[in-house]
Amino acid sequence: MKVSLAASILSSSVADALTYCSKSLKLPEFENCEGTIEFCRNMNNIFDFLNTRNFLSKSPYKRPLSEKNIEQCNSFIDFSISYLSSLKDKDHVPITKSIRKTGFNGLIICLKSVKQLLVDLVLSGKMKFLLTYKLSQDHLELLFSTIRARGGFSNNPTAWQVEAAMKRILIHSEIMTSSGANCLPQDTTTILFVSSNIKKQNEIENEYIDMLCAK
Image (cartoon, rainbow, N blue to C red; front, side):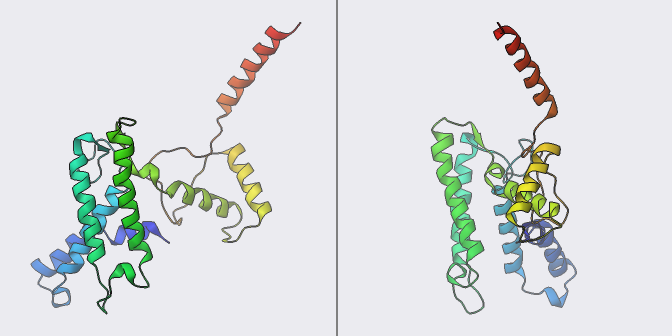
């Protein structure tokens, strides 16, 4: 699934554009689109809440989860779960029970998991804050994208191709991703990178140990 495309479409900027076309321009094609506007804004806020990674963000949905804002976080989680559960398709079937239920149920599970993690990690004192982006599977998606790129962008690489790609990634360079990947990197998290400086330092330390232990 192209998560990057979904995040771009279901965004506050799209909601603002729909509002402008409906309220300011009075275009007949955009009449009665309030439900779509609300859906885009709520989905944008949920995406932001599940991808917090910046301490300096001005948006309340992009800030790290901590004891200072835990009440607001729990309130937002409860509201989002209630909103997603209330959505229905054109046949008035709850979206969480329709054939397209996977994504919505997945968001509900993620929100419930974050709520429990706040209790287990933040309120217990094990962590001062929680960055939800670190819990996402984007890092795995980037790894898989790099493996596919090493094999000519094949969606079904053989075991030998995967092994060869992993060796090249570990030895030569850190994981980079293409603009056409399923998701895009949101921070500078390093994945499967072996620094040559660390390797040289370890070799020097081992030589000193060998010299000291030599008879």
